[in-house]
Amino acid sequence: MPYTLQHPVHSEQLVRKSRFIACVQPIDSRADALVVVASLRVQHPSASHVCWALLAGGQSAAVDDGEPGGTAGRPMMDVLRHQDLDGVLATVVRYFGGVKLGAGGLLRAYTDAVAQALIGAVKVPQQRMQTLGCCVPYALEGLLRREIHGAGHALLDVAHGAAVELRFSLPDAQVADFVRRIDDATQGQVQWLSARD
Image (cartoon, rainbow, N blue to C red):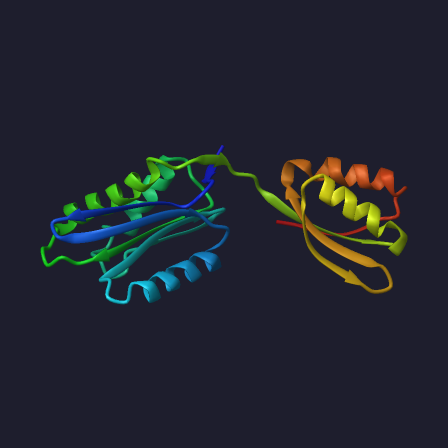
């Protein structure tokens, strides 16, 4: 079973005058990862490189950001895979210290930066989530909201028209039981609109 992280974790190290600032954090998608990387570039405008590796439900990336090919992103990703992580982004900001490290030195530095950050990480089992949508008569809106809230699921959107349309997310493993429970409680008056990842 893959794991994600409960909280972001960080490390910083100096390797032959170059400074490596690492962060590994939970993330949901490549789009979210790109936002984080763009933010790091703004926060560290004088950094030489912002390298990153992403594992997020089939969306993966290994970016060397100008370092020699295969010396940064791929080794960072290997550390994430070795730790059986998914739904995570590893970033390493490098400030060049004037001494070239060579391909082997870079590979070790990026690997160590991510590995050091993960030493204190709290791993949690990753749950695949599913988004459901349904339409209910106005008289059943309160009941459905209570069921969603009581089960600890996230209500994403509510639209009021001829009926009430609700969208919410819940773990894949709980979908069948939740749908059955709602169908029973509403005597089949719920119209299920979609089920998507």
